[in-house]
Image (cartoon, rainbow, N blue to C red; front, top):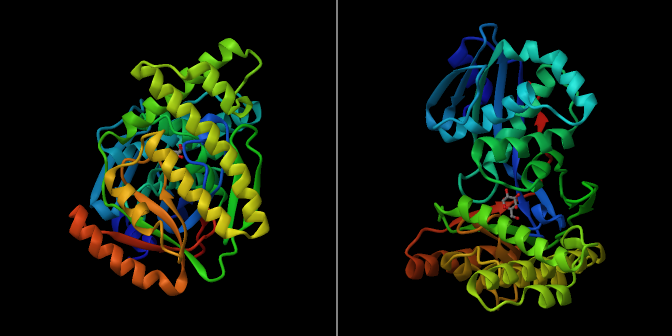
Length: 401
Ligand code: GLA
C-alpha cells in the first residue's frame, strides 16, 4: 500500500495535518451480548484503516476512499444518510460532533465551542486492509478513525469511551444498524496482546493478557456476505427486548438479562407458537452465553485455554441452533475442526450470516489445517476460503511521520 500521506498529497496537493490508524477487532467470546448488557471479550487486530486529514475553509468535506477509487464532496450542513455506503461512516460521526445534543454537559460545552471550526470543512483520505463484510468491523474502524482524527485536529477533548458511544450512535442513525458498543469500543481501546473484558452495562473494562504460547488465532473467512445480515441483526435485538419485557411483567425487579436465570426463561417464555418459540430460543442463548463468558474469563485468568476453547465451541452451537445467526458455510468450518486435537476452540464471530470463524490453533498445525480446510471448503461449499493469521494490536492512534 502506498502510504496514506502520499495519497493525500497527490489528491489535495498539500500534506495532511495528521494521520490516524484504526484497527478492526476480533471477539473471543460473548457474541450478541453487548446490546443485551452482558460482558464481551474483544481485542483489536493487525488489520486496520489508515486516515489522513487536513482542514478546509469553504464549508465542504472532500472524502477520498483510495481502495475504491471514489471521491465524494458534500457540504457540512444538512447531513443526512447517503446512498454511498462508506460515506455514512464518515458523515455519521461528523453529524454526532456537529449536531447531537449530548447528555453529558462537559462534552456538550466543549463541542459547541468547537463546532464553528469544524463547520469550515476538511479533506479526508482513507484506505485499509480490513476485508469488507467479513465481520471484522471495518465500518467501526472508519468511524473511530474519523472521530479520533477530529478529536485531535479540533481539540475536542473527547475520551475514548465518549468517542465509542458517538460512533455507535452514528451507526444507528446513518447506517441503520442497531449495533452494540463492542466494535467501536474495541477499535479505540485495544492494547497489544491483550483482550478486553467490557461490562456492557456499567462500561467498566479490564485488560487480560492473551498468552497463547504455542497457539495462534486464525480467522477463516467464508467470503459470504449475507444481504439480510443487518435486518436480521435488528430482528434479534427486537426479539431479545420482547423476551425481556415478558419476563419483567412477571419479575418486575429484573432490569436486564443480567438479572435473569435459565429457570425464569423456562417459566416465562417456553411457548408453543412459532413466534414465541423464537423469543424463547434467543433469550435462552443470551442467558447461557452470559454464564459462559463468566466461566471463560476464569479459564483465561488461570491460563486454561483448553477449557476456554471448549466454551467457544459451545457458543457456536448456541449461535447456530438457538440464536440462528450462523449459515451452512460457518457451520461447516467449525464442524470441520471440532475433533481436531490441535484446535482448542472455534466458532462463528460477529453478527453472523457469513464472515469469519475464529479459531485457536496450535502453531505447528496451522499450515496443515489451513491446507485441508481450503481444499474441503472449495470441494463441498464451492467457495474460496480466505485465511487471516491474526495478531493482537493497539487501538486507534496517531501515526508519527
Ligand atoms: C456486530 C455488532 C456488535 C455485536 C456483534 C455480535 O459486530 O456491531 O455490536 O453485537 O455483531 O456480537
